[in-house]
Amino acid sequence: MSGGERYAEIRASAKIGERPLFPLPRNFSELELQAHWFAGDFGREFTSVAGDKIEIVQFGVWNCAAGPDFSDASLRIDGRLVRGSIEFDLADRNWEAHGHATNPAFDETALHVFVEAGPRAFFSRTSAHRNVPQVRVEPAALPGLTNNLPLARPGRCHAPLRDLPDEKVCGILEAAAQFRLQRKAERLQRLADLHGTDEALFQEMAAALGYTQNKLPFTLLAQRLPLKTLRAAPNEIEATLFGLAGFLDAPDLRQFDGPTRGYLRKLWDQWWPRRAELERLALPPRTWRLSGTRPMNHPQRRLGALGLLAKSWPQFRRSLGKTNLAAVGEFLGGVSHPFWDFHYTLRSAATAKTMALIGATRVAEMLANVVLPFRHGRAASAWPDYETLPARLSNRRVETGAARLFGGDRRGGRFLRTLARQQGLLQIYEDFCLQDNSDCAQCPFPEQMRRWV
Image 1: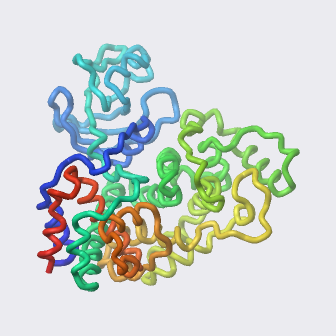
Image 2: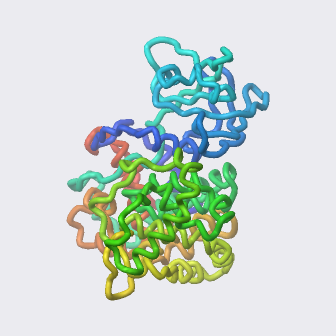
Image 3: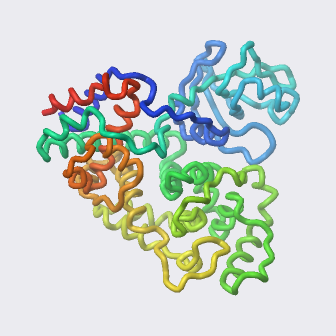
């Protein structure tokens, strides 16, 4: 039995509370939930409000015209194949409140998905009085809901871990990392089954470029502008991305220097003819989190990197096919742009020195979270490459988990020198600390560690 399988066993046998130790109120936006739906995070098999078995065969595409959120979808209802559109609302009553019942643009809706059910039964009907099947989804079941958690005091697991030899602690962390790698590989494969391999990779690479703060808008952009659509007009990729992101207005270009003025003029001239066509899919400004990010990590720079990735997608795929992982790292680290190598934002002054568009730390994260899970799911184990990735930098989530598990143990820094062990720490913290509502008293992890072989 591998370490990952052993960890999966103790995780499955854990009988812990369902409420997190640090309860965090979470108010999802409709856009965020729609992105989770399109990614298949809610699953693809459901039971409708009326008791029908519903299977999503094809999630369709984000609709850029008037009407439901997703068009060209197909589903099976009690085994019968149905084609049409899918509407996703926060509440069942929004079907009526938003006027869908009388809007002919919604007449071809095949499924109404909602989150909150009202106190009375509600039926989604078209203008022709056809009943639209309804499915309710539960956001609480979504993975990875805990972000930006406060630093914690040492937990009860600190004692048994403190008494274990170094190699045993490292073995536990690496087993959890193996489990995490396998789960990421399975998720990427599910996404590929839904949207195709290239689109799945593009969406995951976009999310990785968005960092924690802007993962959602980057995911939405990759979903709403599929790679195939972007590459159909290769010279307009950047303009389309920046326009749909809401970063292109009509500024007075006279205030900018020559290079900035020329770049903005080019983007605007390419975006303007497509603006009316794609305006419905443009992201609201509130979707972006622009404060609190380092200038080099500003989402506009990362969007420039995403545009270059889309343009050079064949080269990226060729690097993925090479045995040596360094080929992918060199490709990502070598992404270069005449404007973004010297600018933090679309309107910032040029810097004196060039700046890496995708730095070494972000490259390592992309390798760990996208590239190696992709390889792991399609060939021999990617673990040998995964376990040797160095930990470039820590972050608040890793520091929080380390405080909980290791407390003041001086060996903590040694345990987290590889990116894989950091990932293993996060997996343990998410599986046990964040699922325990007894303040460690009933958490099974400390006892499991004492019996770990």
